[in-house]
Length: 110
Length: 116
Image (cartoon, rainbow over all chains, first blue to last red; front, top):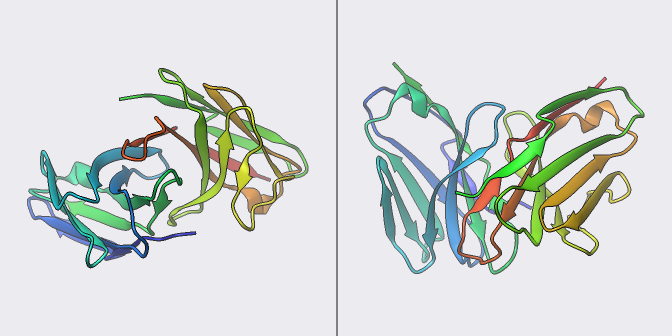
């Protein structure tokens, strides 16, 4: 079953702009993870944020987590054409497997 | 990071035949692996949890007799799609993690299955 709901479903921006994607989930979690998937390829792990963390940075990525609202956001700053991909949030509760959201398809236009 | 290798990356088979997909953790022992299925432009849907040395746990709606999972060692899990039909055409991805809830999961490259 899916837990996460991302919005927007699709996002198109110009190179250099920032891209923000949001994710909401339904149950309590241990952590929330963001993944990237290029068309027809496997998943690349971007960042993991634990339930007791509120914000995390990695290079041009910034992730926030609001457990009271059961939501997270992924911000990609100074986007590049190479950032074009689908981005998924996934949540983990205890030892259960990752449950993925529906994803956001990001297009960065050069 | 850890590496999970999935093979083959793509396969075309005839209706009624069976296809085996392998998922290997190359540099760590994975007591648990997960199999996901992804239709075009959709998200990953968990099919089953594969536990080394025991039976797999299937998600609701996934036929265990059709999608056979074997996890015979700590580094290898296989998914066999039996008596494949065109509607089984999809992208199948395996995943393995270190076991602790607060560790990232590592994914294979995925297998594109086309049943003709």
